[in-house]
Image (cartoon, rainbow, N blue to C red; front, side, top):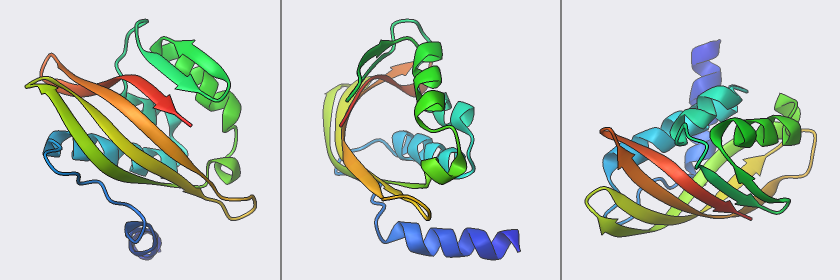
Length: 143
């Protein structure tokens, strides 16, 4: 049953998801695939694994600026307290701008398909850095 559910989810979400963008490091695509999988399982802590675990992390959204990994996780937990409100997440990466071998900007869109609520969508600009060999989001501006 789980395999069938996963296959249906993958078929439905890949129509919207586009993780590759010209020049985007494949490691970042992998991080974003893991983020989508965690989100779609209701695992916000797993989703946050893609973010820098630092008090210097910056998240900018419609409700303002949030600083730090723990505060950003708490913001997500407050905004999405149930799987019904979380919906099914898909990303649409559009443009990667390298800022050197260990940093870059990613422009894209996000979409939440929800069964019991209105769908939601918006755009993001993510600043990625490779820190200690791992690509992480150090700044996220989502609208």
